[in-house]
Amino acid sequence: MLAQLASTLGALQLPLRISLPDGESLDLAQSPTVELRIRDPALLAELQRPTLDALGEAYIEERLDIHGPLPDAMAIADRLSQSLVINAPGDPPATAPHDRQSDAQAVAYHYDLSNSFYALWLDPEMVYSCGYFRHAEDSLARAQVQKLDHLCRKLRLHRGDYLLDVGCGWGALARHAAREYGVRVHGITLSEQQLELGNQRVRSQGLGQQVRLELRDYRDLPRSEQYDKVVSVGMFEHVGHANLDNYFRILAEQVRPGGLVLNHGITARHVDGRPVGRGAGRFIGRYVFPHGELPHLATAVGSMSEQGLEVVDVESLRLHYALTLQHWSRNLEDRLEQARALVGERSLRIWRIYLAGCAYGFAHNWMNIHQVLAVKPLPGGGHHLPLTRADLYT
Ligand SMILES: C[S@@+](CC[C@H](N)C(=O)[O-])C[C@H]1O[C@@H](n2cnc3c(N)ncnc32)[C@H](O)[C@@H]1O
Image (cartoon, rainbow, N blue to C red; front, side, top):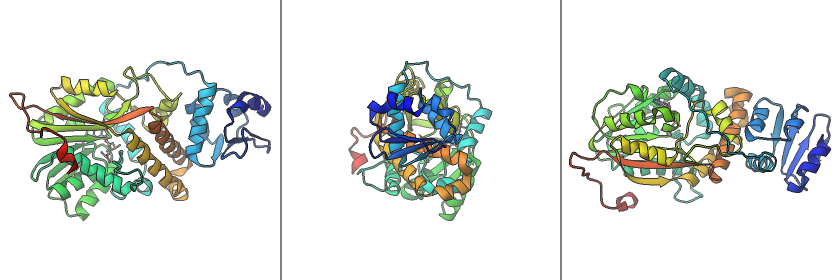
């Protein structure tokens, strides 16, 4: 079987060693940097058509081990699948109904894994979304503070403003906005573990008068125009196409006329949602973010507009997310033993592949991430935003 693989794959010159339990091995080029140790010989037949989800699944089921740097392994897996898998466009990914109960379960599966596990590889503020790198060599901690500030500046926060943070995670943005801009913040999350740690941090930083975090589904926000600004960061990926209009309608309903809505989220590569990455999206949907869906930017902007929001600024942060994920993945790779003790082998394998794979995917334009700023126009159609973006950068 290895001989057959050698004839199929030899021309690719991949820096890869494939080894079998009996000690037999095949180097596909001189000086391989990555070794795939096959534990289950039946897998060799599947390697004839290595979709990325099949490879990832074999890894988490411990039918194979990966030795060597994960970024190299991702690049090799992609080249393998590019060469051997016919990439027929395929159907757009299935969309899920997204009721409150299934969304709560999907959120708990991902975010209630273990606060200590997330603390191992996120920045100290535990921001779980793309950072903002002024320089590629910025540290993760710096990039995350810069991102929080970039959001606050785009929202033109002023002392006394009331901000709603939809999908507030561990509350990093809420605390930053309260501390640095003197605003009041109401943050909502569906994760009990996030809420517990977020609240601890609010109290220990003496921000209890300004910041209120609670467990609440965005669909259960009372209809009121009570907020000056609304922000949602890394959350709309959980909403689903079927609920997108309802989601933006709810955000628009929360903000007073003249107020701002900022949506920061991952967006699809193709308008029609056809998949990229030969199975990578299927892997994420099955093991990482159940029921996750990525609308295209055009779909998101269209939906916002239809809900009465005027889109005033759009920024892509795709390469910032590639850098962020590289940091997260390296941090996790540096703490594998601690991570294994916290979440066990299977979850560790899923998160290793997810972080390294998404770093690769963002770098290779499989998906994008956009901050979309919109205003809810005043009754005559006006608003009070500055004429230029210059204030964001001073
Ligand atoms: C990727 S995290 C981003 C957290 C935070 N905004 C940040 O940047 O660190 C997504 C957040 O969305 C929240 N979320 C997902 N679905 C939600 C829903 N239906 N209602 C409220 N929050 C939700 C999750 O609980 C989680 O806090």
